[in-house]
Amino acid sequence: MPRDALLVMAYGTPRDLDDVEAYYTHIRHGRPPDPAALAELRQRYAAIGGRSPLLEITRAQAAGLEQRLQLPVLVGQKHSSPFISDAVGELVTRAVDRAVGLAMAPHYSSMSIGGYHREVLKAAEEEGWPGHFEMIESWHLLEGWLDLQAEFLRAALATLPAHARNRTVIFTAHSLPEAILRTGDPYSDQLHESAAAISARAGVSSWRVAWQSASPTGQPWLGPDLLEVLDQLAGAGAQGVVVCPCGFVSDHLEILFDVDIEARRRAAELGLELARTQSPNDDPRFLDALAGLVRTTLADPVPL
Ligand code: FEC
Image (cartoon, rainbow, N blue to C red):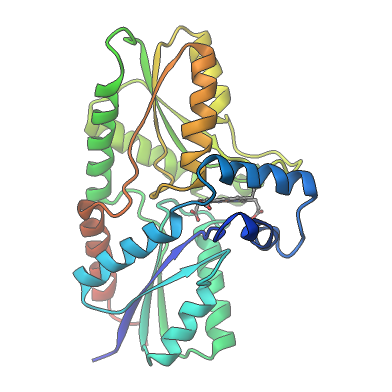
C-alpha cells in the first residue's frame, strides 16, 4: 500500500504587527514595501485586532480533515511559516509516496492555485521528495460547499431588515491582474459558475459578481470592484445587499477588514443595509465535502 498524505495549503498571514513587514516583503517577491504602504497594511491588521485568525482556522480545517480521512494532513502556506516547503520537507521525513494538494480557495487561476502547485513542485525538487503529487486544481462546483453557501446566503438574507426590500446579492473573490484573461485563465468564469449555482440553490434571482481587495500596482485588475458595485446599486435604488465572498473559505484580513469594515463603511455612507454570509471555516459540513473530494482524488489510479 502506498503511504498517502494530504497537503492543505493557504495564503499565510503575519504572526503579529511586527511580522507584517517580512510578510509583505515575501508577497512582493522579496522587495520590501515602501514605508507608507507598510504603515497602511499594519493599520489594516491593527483594525482587526492586530492579527488575522487565518492560520488557526487553516489548522482546524486540517485537523478536521485528518480525523475524517485517517491519513497525515500537513499545512503549508504561500507567504508565511509553516511554508509549503516545510510541509514538503515533512513528506520526505515521513516517507510519503503520494500526496494530494488541496488549496483552501475554490477557484483556479494560474496566479492563485497554479501558484500553490508550482510551489510544491519546486519544493519537491529542492527537498528531494520523489513521491507522486496530485493537485486538486479547483473545486468551485463542489456539491456540499455549494449547499452550505446557499444555506449561509438564505440566513444572511433573512437578517436584512424588512424595509430593505430591493436587495441584491454580490458574490466576490480576490481580484487579480486583468492580464490573466488574455491567457484563457478560468478564474472569472469559475466565480460566475459558483455564483449561479449558489443563487439557484438559494432561490435568488437578483445577483452580481464583483472583485475585492485589488492591490494598487498601477496595472488594471479585474473589476468591477465591490465598492464600485455598492455605489452603482445604491444609485439604482437598492436598499439592501448581501455580500457572499465565496472566493474565500476562512475569516481573515480580506473578510474582516475589506468586507466587514471597508465595505460596511461605504454601504452605511450610501444608506444601504449590508449583510455578509458567514465563512465556512471549520464547519463540519464543509470539511465533509472536502474530505469526499480528497477521497475521490485518492481513488484515481496513480499514473505509472
Ligand atoms: O488574513 C491574512 O493575514 C491574509 C489575508 C489574505 C488572503 C489573500 C488571498 C488571496 N490573495 C490573492 C492574490 C493577491 C495578489 C496580490 C496580493 C497581495 C496581498 C497583500 C495582502 C494579502 N494579499 Fe492576497 N490575500 C491576503 C492578503 N494578493 C496583505 C499585500 C497588500 C495588498 O496588496 O493589499 C498582489 C501581490 C502579488 O502580485 O502577489 C495577486 C488571491 C487570493 C485568494 C486565493 C488564496 O487564498 O490563495 C488570488 C486570504
